[in-house]
Length: 181
Image (tube, rainbow, N blue to C red; front, side, top):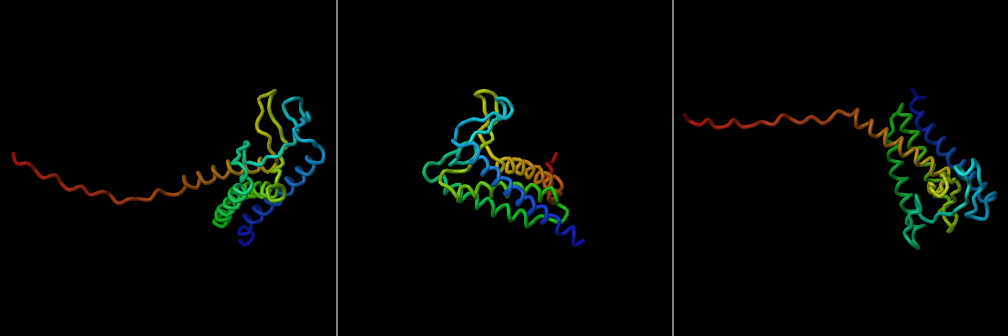
């Protein structure tokens, strides 16, 4: 019984450590091997390339001006607080929920490290597309956040499906007054 109670915690913390570790190492390698920025290195033809870019904004290059770094740093901290509350409500045996939250938290922490460490922005280097039709450049943390968020949405949707709908008492309708014939 004790083992099953620790299961979500083990999954959650292990995933955070793996995602953050992998993200930090791959970003360091990208900076070392792919400099200067914006120079593409083909991996699988033109479909998969490594291209070093620094993203001062958020996903898909969303930029809020000179305060983007601080705004997205604060939003990340708020998101981590919300995710922490979700994790704390994870019951023993809810492994999929722990995986989802662990992936999102690990990715958020990975990108948060970049935001705190450098005013240049988050290191992105995975460049996928065909010719000029390219997905915005991303990193390992972004992959973890995306997969984790989709999985979390699915898990939470499943939770809603399993919860019985609140029953409401039958509505009493007063009898219609009879109309004399």
